[in-house]
Length: 141
Image (cartoon, rainbow, N blue to C red):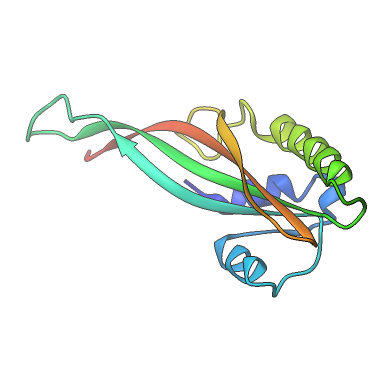
């Protein structure tokens, strides 16, 4: 899966102000080295496959690629984090609008949402991850 096309698509969300990056930038962000929020990070998570139906002759395997979109929003506006949650929810809806049903590369199906979870909440930043999956087929010929 081409992650750059997903990053490019998310950069069109005005609220991110082009602050969309990959896994290396996320690694920097969680150690406190990235302070521009709101931001999003596109991270490859896994690929799972089905068995090859043709045995050892020709390989044609269906697979599911999974990626995470981590959203980072400011968490300084109120002590309960209500504004951070509202900001996160608005950005999640924008991400859903851009990704759901969109095929990330030729030969892939459109993205489906696979769930989300809180990654970290500090006094400055809330990190939330939504996972998306897309199906494809790998062939040897």
